[in-house]
Image (tube, rainbow, N blue to C red; front, side):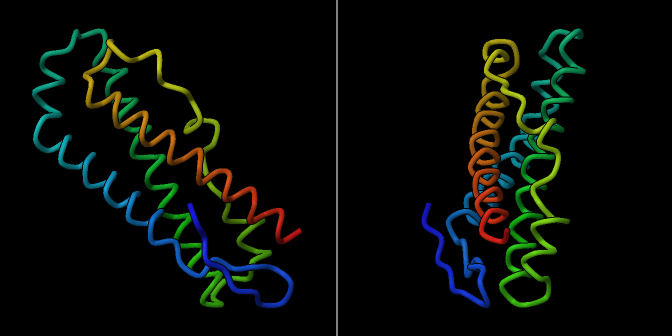
Length: 141
């Protein structure tokens, strides 16, 4: 992933992350379409014991994607000068790491395949953004 930057003061600011933004939006769209078109049918087919797990994992996907989108918006606010990079690094980092960094590979074959696909993609995306967040924080300090 390539990030274009420019420098204001001593810390580089993110100019634009079209790939990251577009990937996140596409994954949000994919998850929404799945929920809308197949979510109820898949929930009806799975074992009653797995319904809570299914709901929790769908919530984890949503949390990952919403946290990523919030992070992107903060980076844009930094670039536009609405938030100082120091404030963004200290107050607006990527949220919910303890929940979002749970590796869900063990759920393959347990939950519907498309849910596992969404879990994998959202995990990989969150992990990449987490590395970017860490780089941003290092550049500020």
